[in-house]
Figure 1: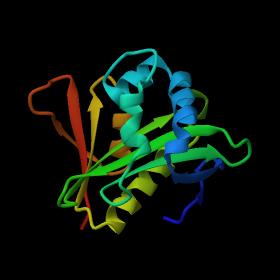
Figure 2 (figure 1 turned 90 degrees about the vertical axis):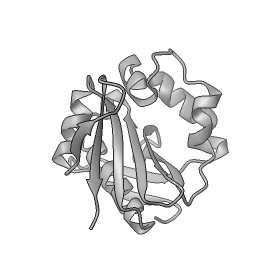
Figure 3 (figure 1 turned 180 degrees about the vertical axis):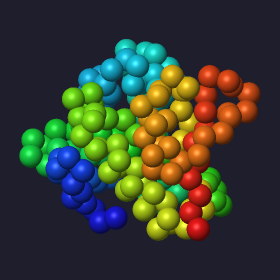
Length: 169
């Protein structure tokens, strides 16, 4: 990925996507304040009204090799509309992904486009498999990931969660 990539969703929304930096903390905090309580709970597995500095820290301080945090801005308005994370294990065998989308941008292909971007980035880094850990209540994300070729499996030790995985050849 270049410093800033332009991607277009299947519905025609143009996004400027770039890695997050420490300077994005206030913007990212405001973004998550504007995300629904349910979506915040799905992303952080916590139901707080505000995402803490500690929760934002991994999104702002990626090492750009094993982890990368991407921000998606509407190219027309410049507003932050999505956050996407790739966090790989030490061997770069498995990468965990997570995506959050502003409510008014759901259903416009933003999730599809960012899942594709995360998959390309994982493959570029040599990752063999990507996973997403979802609440079983997050039906929209589970269905989207299944449509993108992810396979569901139980999450050991927590029946409220499911792991969706996609293996690259």
